[in-house]
Length: 137
Image (cartoon, rainbow, N blue to C red; front, side, top):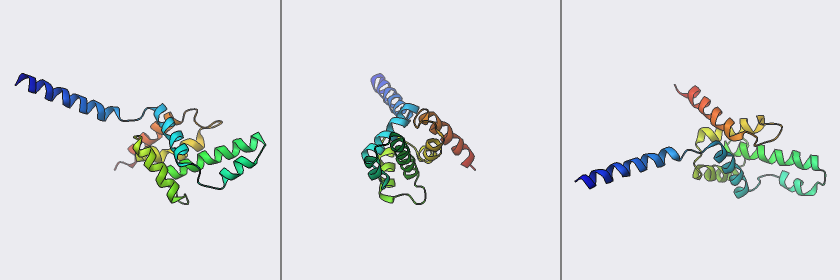
């Protein structure tokens, strides 16, 4: 009986630790977004233009446009590509990102300048928590 009680307590502790530990860290959010963009690829003609230009400034601008477009697709913003949006959302959901975090991506990517990904995970965490509190009624 004692062994059964210890096994039951241990199992419940492991299950609760696994569910709490499944939330992504700030670094995990950045990595998940980069991986999802890499897995799903670009969704527009901007990608074709990226390979044709030799100007480094143009390449940086086009790369930033692709990142912003992917963030919009992750949040299912109106006008985004449905297939690309579904691919990115599925990939991010599989990696443990919540819908509030995905909805925070466009804001954080567009406001994380001068360079994307300097503090994307921190912004997403903070913004999604703020949105979650504001949307509670």
